[in-house]
Image (tube, rainbow, N blue to C red; front, side, top):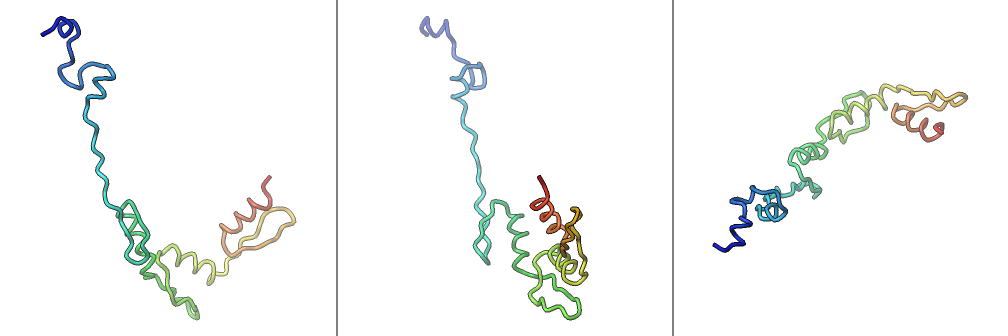
Length: 122
């Protein structure tokens, strides 16, 4: 062993010592990437399987409108979309803009809110 080695002993393991060299000697953590999840119907790519499963329901269109006289035969991929269809088309709810002297009406609350923000906000 040389005098220099005795005067400046190296840390026994990469975790000992607080020098940059000790940090650089540590093995880099391995990042394990999962393969992308690809939709068989449209080819859309997802990083998580749960997102692909949720997306796949949009192709199934399992939620059908049963309202009398409804001409929407295609159905909806998500139940929330069917609910919005029923509220908008069959319940004929109207939402009126609250801005003074603006009596514009909408079949959906989100459209009324968007109108207010775009037309009447400073």
